Image: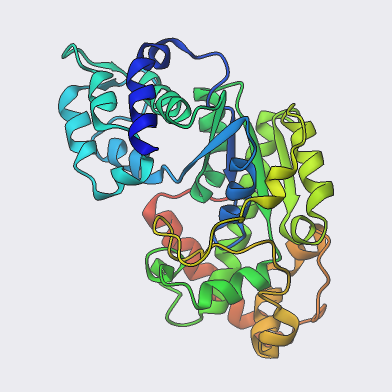
Length: 336
């Protein structure tokens, strides 16, 4: 099957160099541990759209090579370096096809190269539309909109306390939320700040691109009412609803070789439950940091009035966390 897909891709590769009309069609974003992989699998099961698994390593590679602007040039040498990355195999695109994008030895604009990557993935999967799931892109909606003004964005939001529970046992926590200097002193408050920043930046980006291209989905609603949510999602995407979306896990089981942190399983509620699994002291600290956003999103608070001691503690953590971000040159929400 993979060989046939690769052959189909090679036969139609010129189409990838010309098709800029609709793809990339969709970006799925959100704070990590919010269920974006679940949503990716649901949408990818639709017969009309294929979803590429995380591309942050591609854009990070080009950023390191000083290729950032749409008009910056991608050379054969840069492509060769990209192909050497061990994560390239996860794209499931033929190497020769990617080399062929600069096969003449001439460079092409960065935005055209990235668009062609989407097109090659689409062709390899035999679907008319292609999108991407990269949680970290939740901070970059405006930049993505500049590159692809027609692309739509789905921002998946989950109760931050359940995100915190998941992050505490995450194998990659040390290189994500755990990289902040406050993690060692207080991982719960750090996760609350991390979650709040990601959600608010995503909402700000959504306002900048407009409601016609941006939609928020609550993880809890997706799990509790999957048919209703998928129907509404398809309406937003201008696609016919297909119940294959809810059968995404059929024939799948066990560890996902591409993403071992997310084993294949059907829609399941109650995997994380902060009410029964999170110590009260942790809940209080989390809500002292992000309780205002929880309420704004419609989530109930267990500690509407945190103690003065807790408020002072999280204020110190927030100050250090914020300084760490500024030192790294990373973005902060308005009014942070």
